[in-house]
View (cartoon, one colour):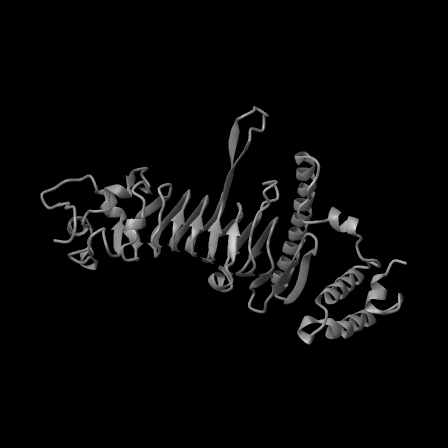
Length: 378
């Protein structure tokens, strides 16, 4: 005889919602691992309770679990894509419901908490707080959500590899997007996810894109194409504060504060502050008019590739190779009004340094006052 969810909770089939809840709580106290109980049994009890809340009498069979598993395998690549597309579609529907729920609460200025997704698809908890912030707990894996207020995130954000149609996008029309202790918790954004912040800041952890080779879609033997999942964060009127950006990432903000930039990174900002010691050859820094780039790490310049580029708004590009050993004081004397900010011995080697848009704009201009010098401090 197949054991029902009622049997698992040791209650009658005609039990009320309160009796179902009380039955769950009684067994949860008995089997919870914090109380020295059997964790597997506790998981079974919790799932039975979740099933009964939605009117499901029997637990899922092994076949049902396989059919609904988060990542399918199958006999053919086409079969895998088809089934995973269904998963992406289901998660996207859940996020649409989540957005409507959060928008209604926000409009009415109410507080509430609700779970979205499922154990098999991936479950996240949304809570609209009294201050208007939306808390998201759990891994955000597919679909779009837009919110008119700040978002606090506890979990990773990724995007499905099998389709861009259901890619993960979080859009804030106002307010900040923040991970809760992102470095300590090692939270990450990856695989082509996108965060858009119209009026606010982003405080995140590590950001990863994804780039890989795949066989030519037209079936030509021996030919491959590059598939790119570029992870993107846009906060054009605010700040982006992150740890490392690695492998196919784009960032745009008024101010960007980061450690390291590695492997096909594009950043665009007016104030760019870099605290780490590594910038690879395929990094492009687009500097906005009247902006500056500041490097803080001692000797960080030695970890910066010669071929990393700075691009100005007029399209001019300067390789860091052309700047690495030059002194900046001379250009500061001639082109920068607030030249007192620069120490007489500021160089591009062995200490923190600042490059301004105006310096780069006038890099090729010569005058009797300009004395570009190479080498160590004089």
